[in-house]
Image: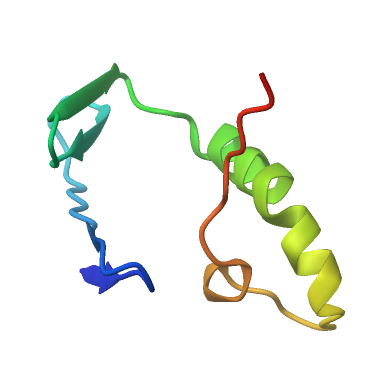
Length: 83
């Protein structure tokens, strides 16, 4: 599955679920500098869900939407370094 952001950046998701596979999460960034992040045993789903709620919560609150909210409603989380 893939999507393109407003800035023209392509995001791709590859999900493999099967018995006997080594559990891991991997992030690959291809650009001027290539970055690979491998997380052995993966990120536990509940922790990942809570992280997404924290990171997109403010944007969802501004939408004043009631009812079922999906990942499509929240958009991509934004990280702002305050250093």
